[in-house]
Image (cartoon, rainbow over all chains, first blue to last red; front, side):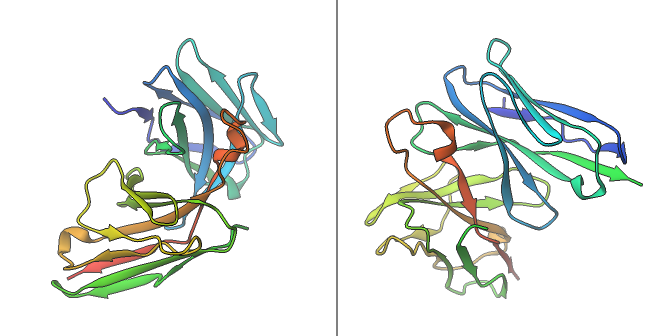
Length: 111
Length: 120
């Protein structure tokens, strides 16, 4: 079983719609959580950190559910430029700075 | 934008050649990492370093080696390239936490643009 699991998608989303997807992690001692965005053939870039109380950054909302060991990302009012692969990233408490990456969820926003 | 650079961006090379992938960052970060990523697959950590003269192997076994003689420089070397080494190699760096257990934002890793390696 992978330590961080994501639905690979693709999630085909009409422009302006809302899309949400989850990521599950296996290590209950996980400490930090992030969503990264990776465009095709590009490097990953931090989209947002995920805080225990949930947090929002513009059209993006991230939630953490420690009891069920998953985090979620919701994108409102999708733009064509939101088309990308979204990587769920977890830092386990026993790993020095090392991050565990999920394989990513592909989102395709269509006109 | 993060100040982390990788060269070359693309490399096509024959089997048996020795190659070095360069990675440099100007942010003064102590921690640096090398990842390997195949198309459509997750990133796999192959090497990391928490400072000068420290290097560790990552979660994915790799025939490559790394060195960290200077804070800003973390090159990766393949002594004898093989077709199985064909992949994208991504370098990253991150800040150390100010205090133990510091907020998660200090774990942010900044990635270079990657080197796409093809071994024929």
